[in-house]
Image 1 (cartoon, rainbow, N blue to C red):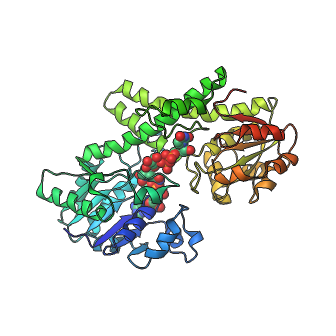
Image 2: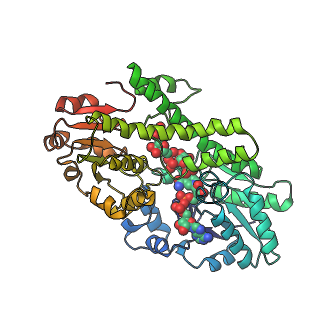
Length: 466
Ligand code: NAD
Ligand code: UGA
């Protein structure tokens, strides 16, 4: 089967970049990315490429090349569904904040709405691809909705989880470690659907890197991959606390263990805690699934990864308070970075939010500089917590477009995101304009301890005893 038209529902961090890369590599396919969020679609269609809703290195160039050629962004969801041979569902699957499974299970209401809309609108057979991260066995719920509410047309359901990381999304999409496709190879129609999706990827991904499994393995592999990655971060962060007590240095420990080829050197950077929209939500989802099968030990094992991460964020803010003579009330503390990692404007679950909230509770005055995150986003993140009024948040936290001004007259600087530009600042100048003693709390192990100490800073790093 030759795919000619693809529709992707959800123009977010996954749908947008993924379809952009498919469009570049498959000029013979027309792709339409649709979303209910009109302003997001308008931003994707913006003439000014700086106004795309997502910042990802390299994304703007490819959008410029393919948008209007074979890639389109639209709010006309029905039309895009109807004309497509293949539909990717790439909507958000956040943690449920109500009812059964509140705070743990995935909220599948957006997925179900998509399935119902696909069923209602479709007049010819279609392949439906789960791109969103979903609890294992969601495909059977989607199939049931499609088969029972549709117009008698046939649907094949595939699972094709996305493994891109933000900040490196384009490179990850252009050269994926693997593409995973889960489908029902036991039927002729299932086999045809799997092959159709393989053929799309074969336009640029070597066939050895395209892996096919049954649907449940594919769904569960995605949750497993994120759980393992997050577990590594929590494991190294747990060790960082032992380092601080014992005089060992976490960077040396990471290097030493990472040289063991069985362990590997990636993803061993101790930090203020992992953020991002997925690690926590996917592990909590896994915990919920385990509990729902009565696998309590399995659930407890994975939940500890999230507990450790919460602890890491809390102890970072606690250390700032205790080091600043047990009070930060009325003191200016500058945050360099708000995004959950460098090279993205995404702030979902960023450690900065939690650390800011803790310090504001201690009546600190916070000044934030981030090269890519907007002012509105930062206030929305804080207001969402509901800890204090939005007026109060605005009074206590200010946002500065100039890092030097953000740091001026502050008692301490906290590095929350590992943006490269922070390394090249004129730290002597920053020091000169700060209150003394001037502290740096480096939540990312980004700066050079010796250099800062020579300037006069008192420098704290995660995982290094002082
Ligand atoms: P996102 O919130 O950035 O985008 C989702 C989009 O879907 C939103 O713009 C929303 O308006 C839209 N949407 C929701 N319901 C809709 C509907 N019924 N019709 C049309 N549009 C609808 O989310 P994301 O970060 O792109 O994540 C999407 C999925 O991919 C999630 O399941 C996530 O776990 C998974 N994932 C994310 C990443 C990542 O790096 N962000 C990586 C791999 C997998
Ligand atoms: C992660 C996975 O890496 C992707 O494979 C996956 O597709 C994606 O989640 C998803 O499903 O959403 P992402 O969250 O974008 O990608 O970014 P990561 O590079 O994984 O970083 C996550 C968090 O862990 C960041 O806050 C980062 O700073 C932190 N981290 C990462 C560390 O603290 N130390 C490390 O060594 C690595």
